[in-house]
Length: 580
Image (cartoon, rainbow, N blue to C red):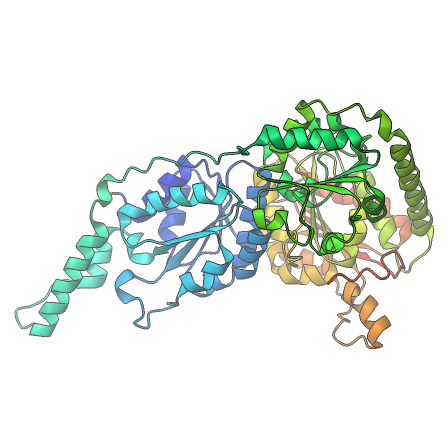
């Protein structure tokens, strides 16, 4: 049987070891979904295209193979733009397949026909608009290579509908049942043009063979020279600090050697973004609190996969008297707002492994510094203990977050989707292992939760998945409870429900004296969950926290998603935390 364009796409996905496609159905892409499922690829359909892209993003971050989303033409593609930009800024190697109108109908008013390439181009690192069936698989192979090469990022392959369906059917679409003897000259010319066009579209389609591209290179030019300079600076340091960000975390094959290298270096280390959990729950060199104070007092700072953006107050958190070593895949991010004395363009994990192998001095000269940092860490933990004990009606958000931390098993993944409640959780909840924390990244996008949970489950089905939501963020993807139920994703979703956009309200009311547009009311999200077929639990009393979470875990073990509607009160824990 002659292979269709959908078959060629599916065959390349199999060659690339893609296990799942995340999608919302559409006639433009149906052949891809049907052919992929016939080849054993799991099709995960959702209720919003952004969710499909978020799910693919999570797969990209947690595994070695880029995640794949397939969406229909027009609105299907436009609905992914926020998620695409989020993946781009998070440097996540996502592959987006987009349907498109038939090649011969472009610009003629066809259904959902827009200039998709111009719209998508600013948000991806590479794109292709395919015009021949024979080019589908090669374009897709190239897309996978581009997504992972250099600075990783999302890519887009536009697949016109007439390239995907069976040739006989497409010819019937274009040519009908034939032209009678009474056809006019214009009709015969049009038929000649269409026959010629179809010959180009299907030329060579039966003998496509697309070798899969090799993986990305991780070499750093002049690595030994950079390492020698860094070792020399470490030898003189008395107050070093290492900050490890998302860009330092590659995939499953590299995270354990990276964690080992950081442990051998012995430098006081702060982890952020996807790097959370890299050293487990309570490692001797890991610190979680008072990073700003440490950076201002340090005499040597190593930024591994972390740019000097708003999270480091554009570099002002770091003392100008400190030596700065920066390593980043992106040359632009490496020098953003602050140029390091030692700047390395390349994978941060490779540099840190080489630095550890380079024999840095024993950290005995850092002993007093480490003890001072540990004293601060312990003092901050005691402050949080005191704050968590302060009643907040109905329930303190700190109390809820501490209970989540206590409940997390070793094999778990935490998904973070929200503002104030999630930021509170980031101080309290300790991921248990590498690649076990998923947050949107620098773009701060809301609505990632359901997609990230779907992608996490596809990547590590044995893990217990906890999704921590703000109530505002949860509203972005509430209909995806249906997707979680249908695909039996036993996520435990905890919604910090204070009935407002609290991260905004706190400063808006204080500075501007008005709560306009920040109040949303406390919805019965647990009842909504039941309507979609999930289990809904209400948490409205402090003495019920442990029991509710124990019940949630029991239900999740049966394969059913659980929505915990936690009614939280106000605290001063994050007062003055506005970021710009």
